[in-house]
Image (cartoon, rainbow, N blue to C red; front, side, top):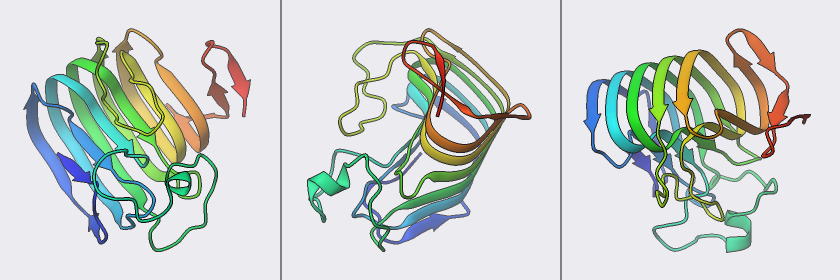
Length: 203
């Protein structure tokens, strides 16, 4: 189930429920970038079972494919905060619950938001994933990012993320957090970021 990438209006209050995904590319996917505007909000994802796919849920606001750029490339893919305009995409208010996934090759959950408009208000509860890893899988398709393989959860530029009863069995990093605000895991507020060398550091 894919939202985006070329979307100038918006999608809100959608529900994906009681589904089985077998041998799919990804489970749930939101893809966009600067210059495309629009919004995705009010999504509810629940009671989903999946097997043998590249990723359970990816949100990528640095999507590299499809269509001509409407603003300069150095702005579209910049890691620095840009001015918020009507062409700034906005993703928020997502509820995820009762998910079971096996044989996920790339990554369980991958949120890659914009610094000026973080992915906001996501509630993740009762999720069980097994990420086995597989080299050569491009599960995210983000600009200037290496492929991920065997990773659990990756969060960058996100705000107000609440996780409860999330269990991920993966071959590499369980959780990588970069530039996130108000991250809460099992009732505890997380104030640190995880570095590539497995050392916890203060943001």
